[in-house]
Every structure is written in structure tokens, then in C-alpha cells.
Image (cartoon, rainbow, N blue to C red; front, side, top):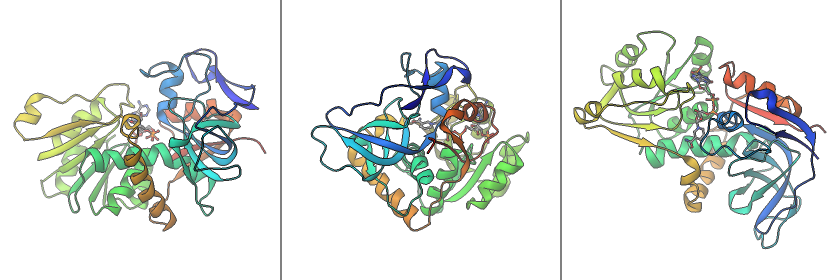
Length: 326
Ligand SMILES: NC(=O)c1ccc[n+]([C@@H]2O[C@H](COP(=O)([O-])OP(=O)(O)OC[C@H]3O[C@@H](n4cnc5c(N)ncnc54)[C@H](OP(=O)(O)O)[C@@H]3O)[C@@H](O)[C@H]2O)c1
């Protein structure tokens, strides 16, 4: 089969499109013939070696896939050959024509859902849901600030927060990205390439600021978020796309009765009941057209390096998807 393989960590050009043997599913695994493959920012971190869980080389990057079951391993109970499914690999393995996924990280994909939407759902949806609900304890009518709101996770989080009744302030790095966030339902948008954007958030919320902040950029953006964070508020840190971690001072917490949470979604979804509950809700919204994952661009599988270049240079909106030939 064709797959992307990294023989070393490094820049996007370490991703080579090659032929390798098709995987054989182990006990408890489902082999999926890929129709579409989701690209996540974390894939770029693992490719470059910047992630603490970067796989040893050689490896095939990627953690999301949508397609049909081609074969099942011993003991698999819920799926059979031909079923349409969405799968999530633990750290790598999905940029390939065939992908072996643990049964516990496989869910049925409704026939009416496109393979692009299916491939975009698992990691993006689980991260948005657990940031807002499991960690953030989102409540209806509160002000929720979401950074990188036009990205894969961000654009999903905007919609999940709206479905849960929040007042959503979407923050992103350009006017075009703000436009996308507005189009998917954000109540307010702020462009954090503008210097005084936290004041805009305060102005938009009658001086109250955001009771819940969902943050994945880190560095200067995270620091500025503190300026429009309500007393008693919560902050969920789940990424650092800028390369700089978020920093919060003890005084920010102490003098405002505030709380900070971290989210590593891979750990949360080890609890299968939490994963399934979130997925059931996400699939229900998807089926009712209450949730639509914006697909920024579809690339051929052999163009994976270009997808990473575009993602890392902040050129993209929504989710990027790879498609195997044929
Ligand atoms: N903790 C977890 O378990 C978990 C799980 C999944 C994803 N994540 C994190 O969630 C975030 C979103 O992931 P995603 O796959 O949906 O990516 P994404 O949001 O589609 O892309 C990353 C976005 O981050 C923003 N950004 C700001 N500074 C950047 C920089 N220097 N370089 C690149 N991007 C920069 C850009 O949006 P603007 O231009 O609007 O700033 C960019 O579009 C990532 O930080 C990822 O690591 C965490």
C-alpha cells in the first residue's frame, strides 16, 4: 500500500510517499481502508520531534481516519468487514491507504456523513467537547472566549459552545479567519493581530470579560487573554501553536478566584465512557446539521508535506484532509 513515512524527524519534507506492507490487524484491532484522513496540528509537532510523544523513526504520521473496515483482528466484536467507521490512532499511523485502529477508538460513521466530515471529527470533536464540557464546565449564557477559533478544533469548539447555549467570542489571527468564525455562529469575533483586542472583548461584554477561555495558541495571545478574563473564571489550556506555552501568574488566580485546567485529550478518552458520550453527542449534532466541520482544503495523500507547510504557516482555516488515490 502507499503511505507517508518519516525516516527522521524534521521539516515537512521528511514525509516521504512510499510503498510499505499493508498492516495486519492485531487482536482487538480493526483495519480501515482509508477514504479520508484528518490532519491535526499535533501531527506537525510529532513529525518535527517537538512533541513529548513523538514516535520513534521510521513512522507513519497521523491519528484520524474515516473509511470502511477491510479486516478485523481476533476478538473484535462491534465491527465487521464493510462497515463504515471513524478511527483514531493513539500517536501515529493514519497517513496511509490502510490503517490499523484499536476497536475501542473506532466508532460507526453514519452513511449520510461524508468521509471528509468523518475524518475531521474524532480528535477535533473530542478535544473541543472535553475542553468546553469535561474541563471547562461550560454553562449556558456565560461568555466563552475561544482562541484560534477558525482552526480545526477552534471552529468545532465555536459550534459546540453555541449548541450548549454560551455567548461565544471567537478570537483569531486575521479578518478572514474572524469572518469564518462569524459564519459558523460566533456571537462576536475579535482579531488578535490587533494590539488592543482584550479591550474589545471587555467592550463587547459590558466590561465582564470571558467566564471561560479555551486556549491553544500560548505565548502573547494567552497572556493577553488574562486581561479579559472574568473574576471567578476558568481557563483551559490545550495547546501552544505559537511554540510558547501559556503562562498564568499566581496573582491572576489569587486576586480573581480563578482556575486553570490543562487538557491532554488522549488521556481523557482512555475513559471509554467519556469518549463515547462525547461522540454520541457530536454525531447527533452532525446528523441534525447542528454541527458542520469546515474543511479548509483537501489534499491528495502524497501532498501531506504541503498540508503541513500550510498548517504551520497559519495559512489554513478549518480542517485539512488527505485523500488516498482511487
Ligand atoms: N491538548 C490536546 O489534547 C489537543 C488535542 C488536539 C489539538 N490540540 C491543539 O489544539 C490546537 C489546534 O489544533 P488544530 O489541529 O485544530 O490546528 P489549527 O487550529 O487548525 O491550526 C493551528 C492554529 O493556531 C494558530 N497559531 C497561532 N500562532 C501560530 C503559529 N506560530 N504557528 C502556527 N499556528 C499558529 C493559527 O490560527 P490563528 O492564525 O487564528 O492564530 C493556526 O491556524 C493546536 O495547538 C493543537 O496542538 C491539543
